[in-house]
Image 1 (tube, helix red, strand yellow):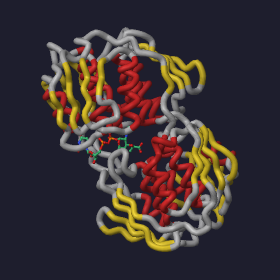
Image 2 (image 1 turned 45 degrees about the vertical axis):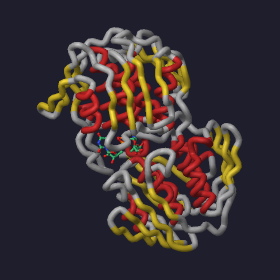
Image 3 (image 1 turned 90 degrees about the horizontal axis):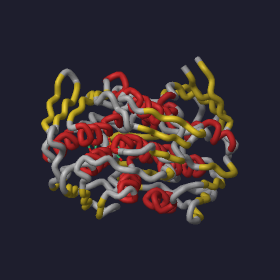
Length: 421
Ligand code: EPZ
């Protein structure tokens, strides 16, 4: 199994190109199930989760081909199967995103229940409840969601009890082929959901309220959609991760191919910590800050502070002059990185959903274990400033959502190497 060997401390310098957003690309790939044409997608991140979902599309009878590392064409005109099997879904819970499009297109499908996840229970009850409100008959049998809607899904008013990102995406896609108008209240406003809606709108589906909590989608009554070509938006979480990597190592780094407007909550917290960040339309430059201020963070839905940046900021807060508090409100078990950061020498105390981080702590290299995607990036960020050699194990978590992390960090001056056990 691969692991990363990182020697610290280092200062980073130069620029890094941000890849396409994993969490935008996943619903977009599922959306290709609604297509009447071959869908061309540019700026596709070359990460494992993308390959997994494309494999699922292939298992359903679709085809895909890459014209270069980040441009793919997907064709789902001749699907032969509507069952998303456990062997794929267990490796990536976002596979649930095929449920809405498959059901809306074929009137029936079976999708394996995703099961638990390192960061929390992560139920899909809100997805299922909304599809039932659209007229689907849903049964859970032998670990599978069996969904039927022989007369097609019906437009209706969905009010989500909680804001759910993939739940909103699933229902937007289901509604696109439904009969009538679907209104979604308390919808997710994440940029990844916005892009999905914009592509469908640009492809002729009548969608209003994009970017707000109130969406309205007029279905095509089962008619497949000619989907326009487009590029995936830049990954705001990858961008935030590199900003924290630069911040913790007192470095000047420029991000290219980034959307600063998607990162306002993140840059707001970095500025509170005393960092100066210059932005243009698609670049961001963070400058060194030798006296990092402590910060208070509460993770919430967009446009507030993203839970997917919580771990990286915890690593950064280990170098602040004073005590920071980080409250995780979205996932009940998203502090797995705490014990690993403590192994590097961080001073972190946990009390329920709140972590108290006291700094600055001198970190020293050792063996640490990645536990989930974002936790593992926090460990890499901390290892870059830890004295000596750190080995980060189970980096398959990282490969799921970061494109060429060690190459990009290496180009910025990090002493980082991928080795095999
Ligand atoms: C998306 O997950 C992202 N994944 C996650 O990123 C991200 O952490 C999360 O949104 C929150 O921003 C993808 O987009 C593929 P939710 P999702 O449904 O859609 C509860 C990463 O690191 N809930 O918005 O699964 C749920 O348990 C990943 O890239 C229900 O109770 O998250 C959570 O507490 C990790 N019932 C809250 O809502 C449901 O049916 C928000 O979850 C659905 C969700």
